[in-house]
Length: 73
Image (cartoon, rainbow, N blue to C red):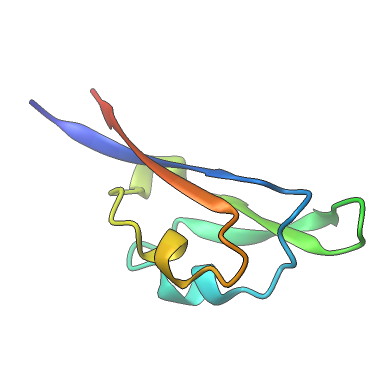
């Protein structure tokens, strides 16, 4: 059974610190050019096909706004 990773970011709570971006081993995550309601750029999956679901991003997120899933393919 094969799996791929996926993340969901609570974009309204994300402060755009970028810690998840630098800790992603597959360079899946980036900061958006747009900003949320508080004026912060938020994290998103720039390359969803690269995500392996390792969970590094969720572990290092200081605001715990990232949820990681493993999806069967």
